[in-house]
Length: 234
Image 1 (tube, rainbow, N blue to C red):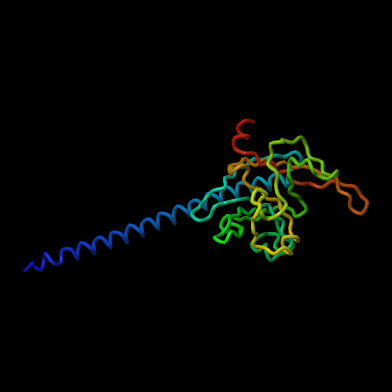
Image 2 (image 1 turned 180 degrees about the vertical axis):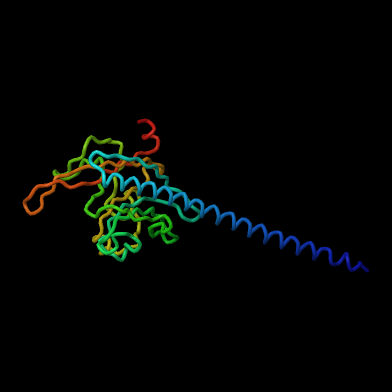
């Protein structure tokens, strides 16, 4: 007849293995959560630097210019697929912004959820605290209308899309209805040939504006997104 201690030993070992497995699972979960939180904090820091640069350019005189890096990171289940500069005309999308009542400008990194619907990364979305009458346009846009007056431009600039979805995502689904989309103003940067690391150059420009038959000048921010490789090449 086996001794009691010999009978209990396998059970105690099994319990110890289960406890160890649960402890390791919990440790990996905590590590992954901490890593994702740190990644999102870094993403928000990039957006904050970009927002600060845009404000400097918006309030400056032409040709005030700033640069900011931006990396389309993957933070856990959140894989950044694009970057939106959006002018919301409805205050419902502007809570927390200084220009809450009259609309707002926002910078929104976006990702596709498990259903493939593109959504902003809430933890890294920021208001751009600049005047609403300042525009955001492609720095290099060969199809621009005649009254658009860009300065000397770099043809390597990656074109921005005019919809919530990045130009490189052909089958993208937006979280917004078509009515809402058509009421806002979008400039969206996507990955170029799979590249998601950019240096974004911002330059204050002017364009001619005809308001009620009176010609004038209005300011806008010309956006030139260069791949990191092209930016290094100068």
